[in-house]
Image (cartoon, rainbow, N blue to C red; front, side, top):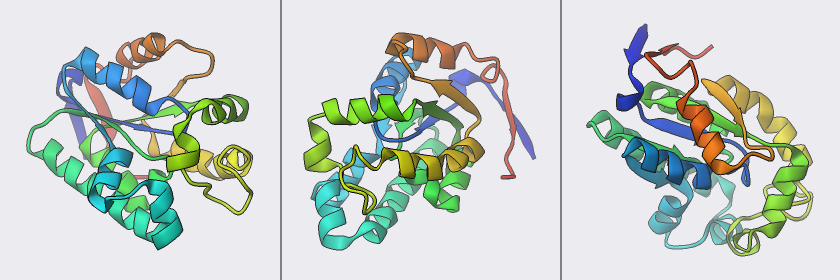
Length: 195
């Protein structure tokens, strides 16, 4: 099954590791497109009434992932009802195949990619990391685990996305321009079935 949806009617999901620039790029992209910007992490925190770090500590990752799925389903319902959105997703949203399928059925999936060194530097510079972004492995801090976790997720990001855009040493406006000017966007076409 194929579809042909112009960019002006397409919602966009930004995927990628934490620190890849999804929230920053997403806000500007939504502004350029004149549509709603949504960020799954704050929506999850609002629903849980606690930080993501606290959720991981008190309830464990499965509880967080379950709420993440509910939030994504709610966003995709809004899109199916006609709202256009740019959605910044959590770095692990691709871990569950049903999330990937839902995003692909609801819009264009763009992977924002950066090197391990760049991601690590951004995480270390982000004051929110310690208080709200938990370590996802037994490898120590959110910064020290980047190598191992990113390596495991790269194939998932690659399989989920319609296009990959580097945020490596690139100003946010240029990232947005690259997304908007991609030949994949005009008359956006893609098989809906996952590989």
